[in-house]
Picture 1 (tube, helix red, strand yellow):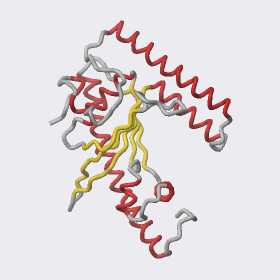
Picture 2 (cartoon, rainbow, N blue to C red):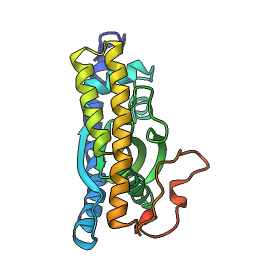
Picture 3 (tube, helix red, strand yellow):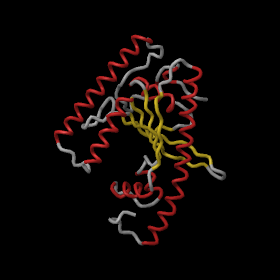
Picture 4 (cartoon, rainbow, N blue to C red):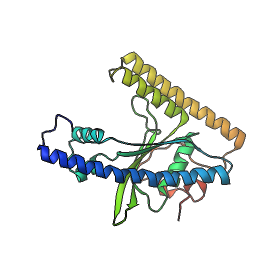
Length: 242
């Protein structure tokens, strides 16, 4: 438990035990989402000419990491309080070939009937000041236990190979400098992020010249309340599962 939290020891022990049990449910949430993603991946591999998914990686936050983030956000130190404040306990990162694939895959996943979209943060349309680009989607899915149904938040991070390469190196640089990165290095990272975006555009243009654009998927565009990811035309770009 983070040292800065002043909570009776009995309550701390109880919360830590309950959180450890809750992590099992989040792990099942990851399993449910990975099944959905792997079904799409196998369909693309065996039934279609093009597979937009390059890599998939999942992670489950540790108990200490969850508690530390809850404290930083000033969340009530209860399971319900932590659940609502820390919605990225379960996370899946999907790496795609091209920017249009990011949106195409997001629409396929979020269009499934048992996937409830809670929040979309589009850092491709609006990159972070440091240059970070990705689409983050918080979804809520049902996990069927032996005696009940638990609804679990899972964070999806969907990005291109170039975006993932940049984010990985940026993380290593910040870790090496204990997050106190000199301004000149931060500027170099911003420039590198622009280069990565330019590479994505060039490679997608080449891909379309060679293979055409059979899905007619839209490229990056801001997500807003007026833009519902379920509102795309039917077909490959917005396929839903029954």
